[in-house]
Amino acid sequence: MTRTVRFHELGGPEVMRLEDVDPGEPGPGEVLLRVEAIGINRAEALFRAGHYIEPVKELPARLGAEAAGVIEAVGPQVAGFAAGQAVSVVPAFSANDYGVYAERALVPAAALVHRPADVDAISGAAVWMPYVTAYGALVEVGGLRAGDTVVINAASSSVGLAAIHTALRVGAVPIAVTRTGGKRRRLVEEGAAEVIVSERDVSGRVLELTDGRGAEYVFDAVAGPGVTDLASAVAPGGTHFLYGALSGLPTPYPGFDLGMPALNLRTYTMMETTRDPQRLARAVAFVTAGLRAGAFRPIVDRVFPLEEIVAAHRHMESGTRFGKIVVTTG
Ligand SMILES: NC(=O)c1ccc[n+]([C@@H]2O[C@H](COP(=O)([O-])OP(=O)(O)OC[C@H]3O[C@@H](n4cnc5c(N)ncnc54)[C@H](OP(=O)(O)O)[C@@H]3O)[C@@H](O)[C@H]2O)c1
Image 1 (cartoon, helix red, strand yellow):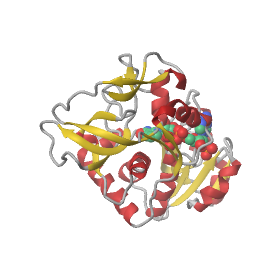
Image 2: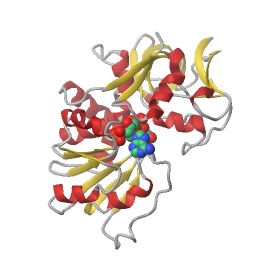
Image 3: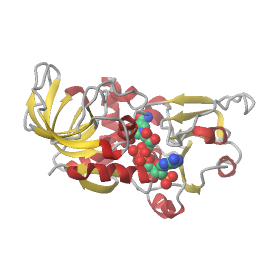
Image 4: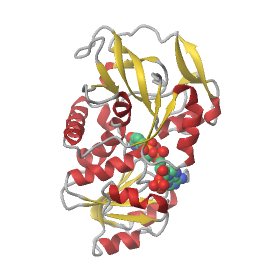
């Protein structure tokens, strides 16, 4: 038996309970992981509340798609991984199938990345989701290049910060958008070329900063009614990625209101990257090179013990964070 977070009904953070559950034996393509640290992801709050893009199929349900730990046992048909190896887990599976909020958990080997000896468990749990999400959209799908401008909202989120670093890594210009004036200085320290403190009317400032051209990319975690303003700051032929829905409000399609510009408006999830082995391999190579060069680093906001998982989710939902929330099992 192993301590595992489950929820028996949909709702707020308080529905999560720490229970003794048998993790089971690893089946074909699976490993049993001794979990050391867990990365907390907004999608988990949405899944728990019944608002995620994928509904909860069965209760009680588990949570968690990002972790670092050590492999305890390997199932049949697993190549490249062995018991005793330190690994990270990247989100590459349905929350209805696996959950890593536990001291030990089954995970598919296809979601594992080897963890170098100099990467501790907290860093190993915090680093992959943000960088793979940003890389997959901006570089793999978008083709972000040196000199391009990218507007990044919810900039203090773990993905927003990774997008700033990713833009800098390829020589592009990151413009950060935050609702919170108190985060400006730290966003500049993380490399934002400009910080716009606003939830609305961002486009005027972006057009000013780009000499009227607009930004080649908008990397939008907020969506909702603000999409029309942000889309009006996209350069002709540019791409507006919608990868989150933090506003919680309906998102209009802005193309007609804006006079049918050459606008690519595209939804994106990191599963496009993590469920394609070749794309995942390219993402791992890009992120690993960035980490080795010191250009990428996990920015950890706060660490909670597993017993305080409810507090960890409450902290996520407070919107006060700067970087990644991590939960440890030790
Ligand atoms: N598509 C994918 O594959 C994928 C993968 C991972 C995450 N995501 C999405 O990426 C986003 C960031 O995730 P995360 O886990 O790094 O951080 P997060 O906890 O979702 O975001 C934290 C930041 O978002 C901003 N924010 C929070 N609520 C907001 C609201 N109602 N309106 C506008 N901004 C709000 C705040 O930043 P400021 O104070 O700076 O404004 C806050 O510090 C989420 O939307 C998540 O669902 C998508």
